[in-house]
Every structure is written in C-alpha cells, then in structure tokens.
Image (tube, rainbow, N blue to C red; front, side, top):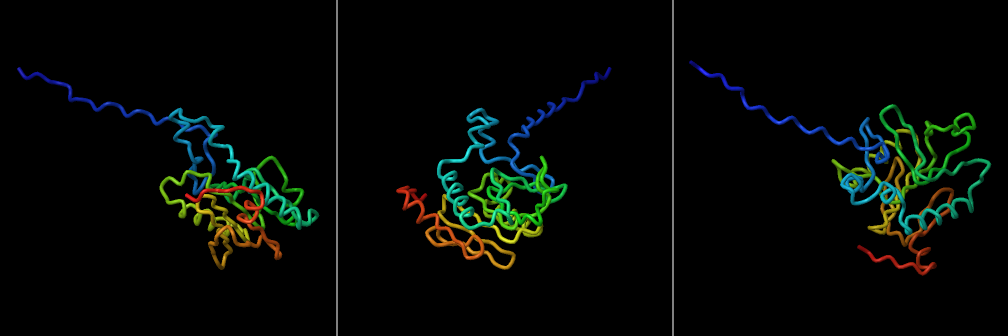
Length: 208
C-alpha cells in the first residue's frame, strides 16, 4: 500500500519590519526616501533624535546664510523658511528644503497653513544630503531632487556639501560646482563665502 507523505513546506517569509514614519525624510515618485542613518536606528545603534539633528558645522553654516539673506532681503516682498521646510510638488512627491526663499506674491497669505507649501520657492538652499540615497548615488540623488524642483518652478538651487567643501549652484540652464572658498551669489548680486566665513571665525575643517 502506497503511503502518502506531505511535501516539505517552505518556511513562511518573515514579515518586513515596518519602518516608522519618523524616519521618512521625503517622498519621491511615490516611494519613501529615508533619513541618512535610518538603518542604525532600526538596528538600535542610534536613536531617531541622533540622526535628525544637524551637526554644529551644518548649523553654523545655516545660521550664517540666514544672516546674509536677512541682511539684504526685503521682508515685505519675500518669506524665508527654514527647518526642513516641506514642499508638496504633487501626490507622489513631497520634498524638504533647508532654506527656501519665497516671493510673497506666490506664497500668499491664503497659502500659509499647517500643510506643506504647494507653490515653488524662488530659491532653495541645501546643506549636505540628509537622505539615504539607497538605490542611487549621492550625486544621482542631488540631480534628481534638483530636476524635480526645477520642474516645479524653482529658479535656483544651491547645495553646500561639507565633506567635499564645495558649493553646487544650479539653474535650469546651468550647473556649476565651485570650491567653497569662492564667492557664491545668492540673488541680486549678493554673495556668501563659506570658506572665508569659517576662517574669520577660526574654524578649521579637516578635508576628508
């Protein structure tokens, strides 16, 4: 008499651990872009707070840029937003800017709410890459985000990259990368120079 045996069963796949929303930095093309260091949080090496905070160098650069901007900007014509200001491009794309300058004729009082901005800033400034560029290079992430912001209507995007000690200046017509010891125009002929500012403050950054 034949004896029937059950075929061996494959072990059930383990469910993927749900990644908390607090680790999502942006949404691109309908997919979450996680914060740099999120894997360390999932493995218990770091806390969420540890990967969300800016370094002292990043904070000093942002503070300096804000001082430069407020030194020439007409506050009756422009808004300056900071603190990872959210930008809602469409239902598949929510991005963040470290500093965003808005024309008040575009970001009108009626557009101010508890939601992300759904109108483009005139100019965006990014200090380093805060996203985990999983699936692409860091340069790929920079260019993809820059391109999306241009399609949305941003006129100019400036990236300050502290590891490489360079500044990338992008407009729809041209992209240029310069040493951060050179003067870089923000708008209307007004410039900043990260290297000169750090020297003036006695701050030495070892090049990696």
